Amino acid sequence: MKKILLFLFVALFSGCVVIQEAEPERVKLKADQRISTEGGSISLQAPLDKNLGVFYEIYHNQEGMYLYWATKGMIVEKLWIKIRDKVDQYPQTKREFVDYIDGVKCRTFEKDGLAQIYSHTINGEKTYTKEYETYCPFNDRVVKISYEYSYNTNSEAFTNYGYSEDRMLETIRNVFRADIQTIFSTIKFNVDREKMQKAGLISEESEEKAYRVKF
Image (cartoon, rainbow, N blue to C red):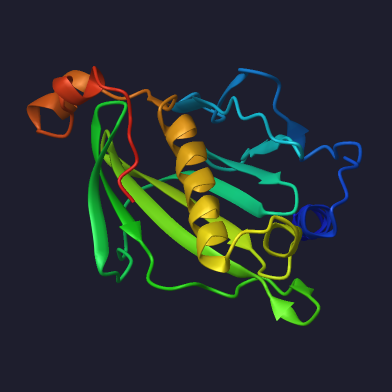
């Protein structure tokens, strides 16, 4: 997995658009393809027209999946979904939202600040990452969705687009919001909807509305 991430960062920030042949653990999504976790508990589509493609991995040792994609010269994005027995601790953050995904009442946390969790640099400048987490009740368990975007202020987006840094950062945030909205709008949870509705964990009204990000 580390080799894949390194390739993705190098391909993104170097301007290279050559896609190496997919390794067994890395599969490129086809247009409008729906994928699901190993047991079929969660499914989604990611019909994203990205020049580095959308790649995914289905976890075989647990119910979950991992997606990653990129816009050349600008941004790398990743998303993890895992089903857990419980939540040990929610993120400490100043910004928290109530989200309805497939009608299920979820909690979204925007982590404070920017992280420098990846070692890739451009001309000595580190890569910055913005992180989010969403937690959704899932029958008697919990779905954790982690997602993030990474950028470097010495990448092509900042040096060649002719935008101010503030405008480029807002453009990157908008790209990320649109991509997450696209994915979350297609998520389907295989849950006991009647039981969860009685528990106040599902809203019929929200099921009928298109998903809209709040961050």
